[in-house]
Figure 1: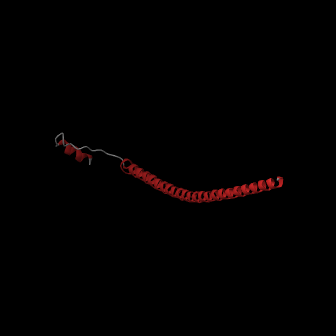
Figure 2: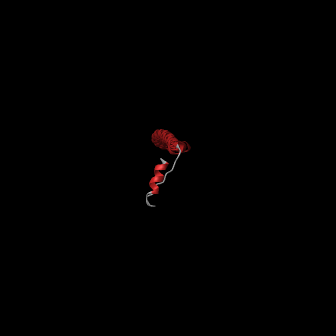
Figure 3: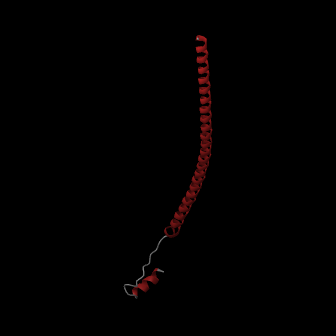
Length: 112
């Protein structure tokens, strides 16, 4: 095959001369094949990693949603509790004021 190139190059102009290169089977086939295999493994690894990250992200979103719902429920319960406490305080204060007035009145009657 090299002889065919040499003959062609001998009878052709300088611009048209062909180059004959002999490259090994390893260089032309095995190395690119290994590289493709490694890249394929990397792609599969990355796909698996992305799938795990997406699953983890979804789990975090679900957890955040649940925690947020619980927080809103607790906030509402706290608001109701504060309102009840305020009402109870006002009722107690009113009762205490009435008792104070009653005892003052009783005290003033007994002194007179």
